[in-house]
Amino acid sequence: MLKGLKKNSTFKEVGFQAIVHMLVFLFYAIDRRNPQIELSELVFFVHLAVHANVIGYYLIPKYLYPKKYIFFALSILLSICVAMVIEELVLEKIFYPDTRGTRFLGVFYTLMSFLPVISILVGFKFAWNFVKTQKEVDSLKSLVKESELAYLKSQINPHFLFNTMNNLYSYAIDNSPKTPELILNMSAVLRYMLYDCKADSVNVSQEIKHLEEFIKISEMQIENRGKVTFSKNIESTQYEIAPLILIVFIENAFKHSTSSQATGIDITVDLSLNKLGIMNFTCVNTFSSNHTHTVGGIGLENVRKRLHLLYTDKFSFEIKNANPPSYDVLLTIDLNQS
Image (cartoon, rainbow, N blue to C red; front, side, top):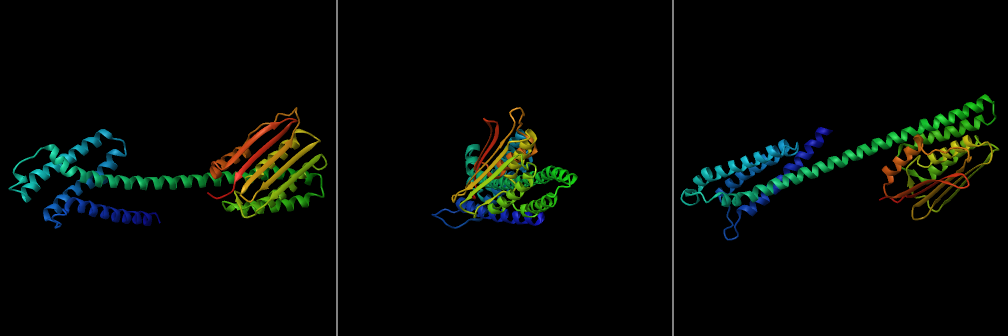
């Protein structure tokens, strides 16, 4: 496949350079008062094209790109000198023995006669290299972004499993009748994570259903020690969102609330999406004033990176500690595709 792509790129470059050489030759050789093309003009142009291609295909990759600037300058100077000697002492002697070939008009005049042609041909080659390199850089950035997103997404599954398996173990030890329900809800969540989340984005309704299943599992940690409120106001379900973005905040809300106080737990999740594709998400959880609530961990660092990679300047994200003691997450995302 790579060999085929390289071959295709080579064919494109050959075609591009052929058109450039033909156009430059026409401007170089054709005189509107004498539209006929002389053999001498063709030979002189081929001579200059050879030097231009030596510079473009050999000297630039060998010396300029590796930043060997002194060698590059010396090699360019040598190439120009060789071109000048061949033109003055060979070609002009052959084609113009009685006129231009009888005397040397000077370095400046000779340079002005062929340097523009070489500069134009080398310039187009340099431009082609730049465009090609830029495409490769963009492709590499895309691959790095995809790899990083895949890695970040893969971290979420074990993070979720670690916490949920602890809860399942506790229910099993206590022979709780809620154990089958927990397993069923956990199965639905894992099915979503393993299969539906393979895509780069999912429909908002799918993500909301996943959040509801996750909250059912997590509510079992609280039981009668507090309340969990999940409200939603969705004006349009045509939009898509990156999967597993919002779940991290809800997971952290349960983790810190249940570990920081025995009773009075209050977790409020609010999700709204208007017809313009602007999604507002808030997640507020109380915690004990005697408990040090730290910001960090795999989950939050993970979601920060994913937000920057996926939405760049199309989101706002704030985490703050409110009074009375609560932990507030405020997230706004523009779900319109750019």
